[in-house]
Length: 242
Image (tube, rainbow, N blue to C red; front, side, top):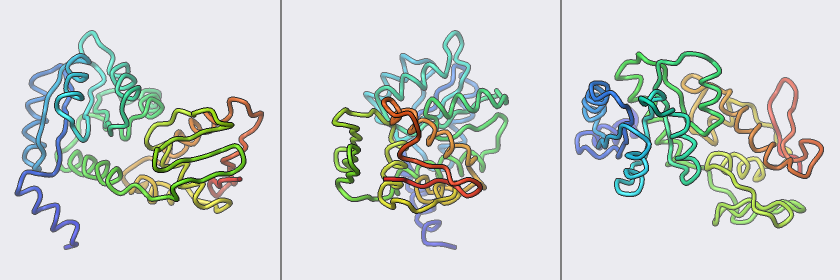
């Protein structure tokens, strides 16, 4: 048994693994999720629509959101986009939608994981713990990284290109800062999942890395005609090119 496992079990007994927000318009589903996650040692708040989610983010300060996509007359994707406009709070989508297009859209909008219903209690608990660990162990980078007209301030968590602020999500920033801290070094998707997400392809699709890199490139490409900063190394992975 590892030290991490022992500490997690101790925290579970004290009921202090973290505060989660369960978002689903079906009270029966919420009841099952609450019972499942409280049994793992989490504190649970509930919401059934976007209005209640926004109120919970202000008043309850959850550490992670479990979000269903079908919320009655409201689209869960819209709720996710709304969360991402104001917060980098980790979000796990729980959905019966199995289409790849739905999964890709969820990741593009900033979800940290996508879990298809039905799922087991151990799987959900493991995925929640994995996402929380990633956010708790974000890699550290130098306070200010500058390459020509690109500046990455890891203290203020700001990216500026030619002096203009580039808006990034939490993981987009972490990934870019990680790359820029090791210029020209090639990283595989598996290595990036490990270093930036604290995860592995056994638990998380490495397409998450591909999608985050696509979004970073898009944001840094506003005045560029090519992918100047993050290059694809065919058959291997990616590298940051100053």
